[in-house]
Each structure stands twice: as structure tokens, then as C-alpha cells.
Length: 296
Image (cartoon, rainbow, N blue to C red):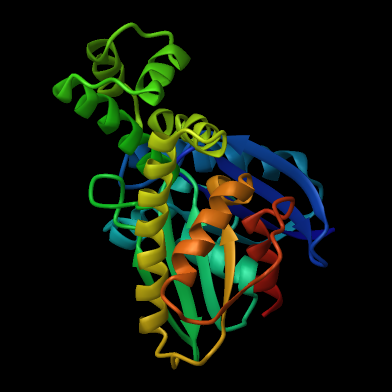
């Protein structure tokens, strides 16, 4: 049996899936995060382990492997990474994880893909050109991501400590983490990695959806940052102000939270430009791009 493998790497985990050539999933392996700009050694180990497990457990011949890696755009050692995978197949394509999502969600159509998981980026294609906005990492941006939502929440607690004006949200966040003070929170924050910080996002979104005004302000601020990236990416596509541009969304923060998607859509709508949103397919991994890529 011939098959292909797609690997979707992100700031939280790495999902590798073997597919029949018609796109039917055969087997899935999940390992840890793989962001080259955060820890390339860890990324290498997680990708290599996921691929070796699949190759050892699936009968047949692997025709191609497509790996979508977070942080690949700015990574200078792509060929070395490929060699260090040390796999028994030469047809291995390394692309950015955002490009993987672009192939999976639009499959050749012009439009934008908005990704918001641990990090965030908007990537698009128009007239066979690719372009993006955002995706500069958690230290420089990632507006609208799980990390950004969480960072704003922690910053809110520190501002409350400075102003000596505690809010219900700040107290609820400390209670959620079983912490007694802002100092304990900061001690934990500086020990957490990017993925752990981003795990605060569901709490922030739940508080906002329940009507907490402070949480609502945080969510709207983060969503506005991502909406700005969407408009910037649209400009890079050179669409006219009357063109209706397709948008596909992916990433855990957007796929799992209708409330947040609605807040983002409202922020985008304020720009007065026409968009249409493609149906969400959370059960279909972006790793399916390996099949489309092989078929093309």
C-alpha cells in the first residue's frame, strides 16, 4: 500500500498522520511541541519520533512526507534539520506550519487563512502569490493567539496590583491557579514556557463569555490585534475594496470557541470590507495538506 504522511507542528504539540493516497487517514501519532525558534533540538526530537513511529507501524511504501514547522520562516538551518531527521525516505518537504494550513484549508483557492492557536498568523494567496501578516512570535506579536490572550490577562493582574484596584477578574484568575498573590503569579509566569502560558486562554474566554467586563476588554483587545493582521494581509493580496475575500480559520483558539470567533468577526467587520467565512472543519487536521500536495 502506498501512503503519504503529513505533520502539523505547533507550539503545543506535533500531529503526524499517515494517509492513503485518496486522503483516508490510516494512523495518527502525537508528540510534543515543535517550534524551531523556541527550541530546535526539542522540535527535531518530537518530529523525528512521530515520523519514526508512523513509518514503523504502517505497512506499505511512504511516497512523500510533508512537515509543517512552526518558526521555519526565520530558521537558518533547514537543510541540516532535514538531514538530522535521518529517515528512510528522501521525499521530505519542510514548509512553514502556516503554509501547511493554507494548503489544507484553501486547497488552491485564493483567500486568507487565519491561524490562532498558541501563536497566531494570517497567511494568504492571490494570483499564485503567497503573503502573510503577523507570525513574528510571542515576544514580538502573536496578537489574537492563546499566548496573547493569556499575556494580557497576566498584565491585567499586575496593573491591578500597581493601581491597588483589584477586579473580580484578577481575583478569579488567581483563584483559578490556586495562587494567593500577584507575586506568586509572576513567579510561575517566568517559569512557564509559551505553551503553558497559552493554557490560560480558555479561562479568559470563559470569563468574557460569562460577562466579566475586564475579561471582555482583554478579549476585544486581542481580537482587534488579529483583525488588524487580517486587514493587512488583505492589502498584500491587492484585492479591491469591493472584492469578497474568502477566510478560513484554524487553530485551537478559533476552532474551539464560537464566542471568540464572533468577537473577531465583529472587529473585522468594522473595517467595512467584504469577507466570506468558509465552514470550520476541526476534525480535519492540517496534515491533510500532504495528500493535496502529493496529488498536485
